Image (cartoon, rainbow, N blue to C red; front, side, top):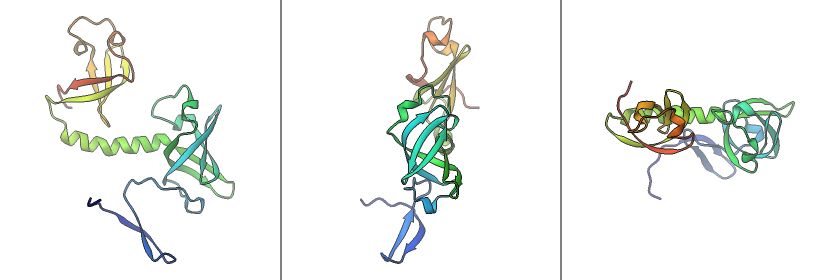
Length: 182
């Protein structure tokens, strides 16, 4: 209450006599007659199959290919069953009742939005909370919330490290110090 926010007028509801407002990047409740490609909606996962996720969009069945679930491969898709998730409509054919969704596109768009903000605020010497996104032979990549940074194997520990996996694991939360920005 009392917050000042920017909205844009989506439409005028003549029946209620109200302006329907929306915010940029807002997730919309899906209405089948208003669906369009590129729209971000909320869908509920109802099950899995060998190719991906089965979802419910306003009472209609939708599908999300396994490659569209996340930025990286998800081994066990069953963890999403029962979850509500924001998704982008990537294919919609009302005649065939075909709705194809992508959670990965939504995640990528969010990361791009956050990347600009983080890069503006990021300075050498700062410390941040990060999550290890992948471990390689030469070091580990840490996600700062929209920007990935490399932690070289020589910067992982005061002691000699044979392989970065001896010190960090994927998904682990770590504190990092920014050494340089390129």
